[in-house]
Image (cartoon, rainbow over all chains, first blue to last red; front, side):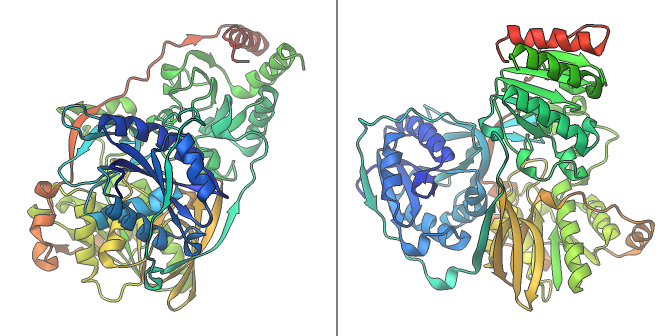
Length: 334
Length: 265
C-alpha cells in the first residue's frame, strides 16, 4: 500500500463499466488529491471487474483497488459496508468520497461509524481549504432554503457522499497510466443479515430526465394525470423529458418518484427548464436552479417560481400549452 | 410486532420562503409558525401503522428533544401510535446526528421486546439521513434504507421492497431490524378526532440521561463531529420577463419566438 492515497473514491460499476457518478467522483477527487499533494485512488467492488478498474484510470484515478470476489458480485449493504470499511482501514486516505446513491445512502453512515469519523451526506460541493488542508463540504439544508459549509472537527478520514450530477467528470484520457491491484477484504458470513432477492429497473420511455436538454416539469397546478399527458406531448415535440415536483407523485398523477426534481429527488441542469403549474418551493428550486433558461407558466402571478425564472407566462397552462405546442411544431418544421 | 418509530420536530418546511431568516449562522425561528413533525418521520409513522394494521402489535414513538417535543410525540399518538417517549436532558442539547443515534439506541434498548425500528429517510432541516443507519450500527442490527413496502414473512423475517433510482429492490431481512422509510409510501394519514382526544389524555414519559445512561463524552454540543463554517441563503433570483399578449395563441407565439431566439428550441 505504498500509493500515498490522499483521496479514496468508492466507485460503482454496472456490468464492468463504471457508473456516471463514479466518473464525477473521480473528477472532483482528482482536484482534492492535488490540493493535498497526494494521489487519487479508487476502490471498486464486485466480481470480475478488472475492466472497470482500467476505465477508472482513464477518468483520473492514479491507482485502483479492486475488491474482486465472487461473494461481492451482487450488491449487499452488509458485505459492502464491511468491504469499504476494511479497504479504508488498509489504504488510510485522508478523504473518502462516495456517491449519494443507493449504496452511498446505505453504507456511508455505517462505514463512518466503524471508522470513527463523521459522515457528510449529499454534498453539492466539496473543496480543499488550501491553508488548513481540511475538506469543506457544502450541503443544501432546510429544504433548499439555506446552504451550509461544514468541516469535520478532528476525526479522520473526512467522509462525504456527493450528490449525483453535482460534479463534472474529466474527459477520459487514454494516455493516463496507473496500477490496478486487488485488495484483500474478508467477508464473514455472520455479518450478512440482509438478502437481496431481486432488482427491478423501470424502463422509462423516451429520454432520461438526467440526460435531457429540455425538461418540461409539472407541479401541483397541473391538477390531474391528463395534464401530464399534455406535458408529455410537449416534451416529445422538443425532444425533452417530463419532470415533476413531489405533489404530483403524492396525488397519484405520475407513477414513480424517478421524475421528481428537487432536494428530495434529482438535480438537473438542462438548457431549457419549463416549470408548469409549479409554485416554486425552495425544495424544488434547489434541483433546477442551475438550468440555463428557466420559464415559468402559472396562472398565479404571485408564484415564487417567477422570481427564479427568466421568462414568465401568467396564464392557465391548459389554454396556453396547446397553441405553444403548435408553435413549436411549426418552428421545428414538424 | 413491536415497532419503535423515531420522530423529530422541525421548522415547517412548507412555510413561505420569505419567512426563512438567518443570523450569525443560525436559523431564526419565525414567529407564529409552529414546529411540525418532520414530514419524512410522519411517513415512518404511516409505515408503522400499516404494518400494525396487518400484523398487530404496538407502536412506540420516541424523540430526542425538549419538553416541548411532547407535541411531536403527541402527533404520532394522534395518528395511531400506542405509546410515546421524550428523551430530554441538558446533556443531550446540541447533539449531532451521530450522538442522536446513540441516545436513541440507549433508549430503545430500554424498551422491552422491540422487533422493528423505523426512521424517516432524513430530517427536513439538516437532511443528513444518518440517524437510521448509525442507529442500526449502535444496536448491531441490519438496516435497509428507503423501505416502501414492509411485509412480515414469518416471526423473524421481513420482506422489504425499497426504492432505488428508476426502480425497486426486494430484500429479506432478519428481525429485529432498522429501516428508513421512503417518501414513495405517499402522504401519511391525518389524525382523527378520536385519535387527537385520546392522544391528549395519554401520559408521555420524559426520560433523562439517568434513565438511559449514555456516555456523556459522546453526546451534546461538546461531542459534535462537525463545525459549521457558514450558513447562507442561496441567491437564485433571476429577472423575469413576463411574456405579453392578448389571446393564448398570441402569448404562445411570443414565447416560442423568445425560446427560438435564445437557441433552446
